[in-house]
Image 1: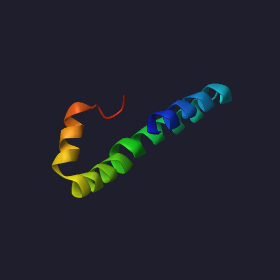
Image 2: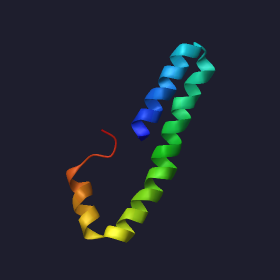
Image 3: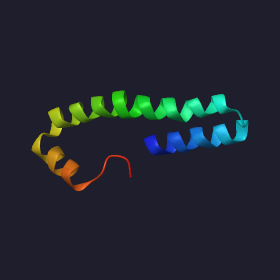
Image 4: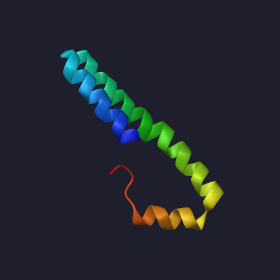
Length: 63
């Protein structure tokens, strides 16, 4: 879902054709990577504990 939003932002920047629109996918990435995802990870660790830690060891964050 997060990667899809960034790809859509890149598409919008390509369609718009202005350098200013390239700030949209950059802002999305920064917000998701440093605010939203860490919040969700803390929540998942609190809810699922060791099971979530094992999951994180098996998969990468973005793709």
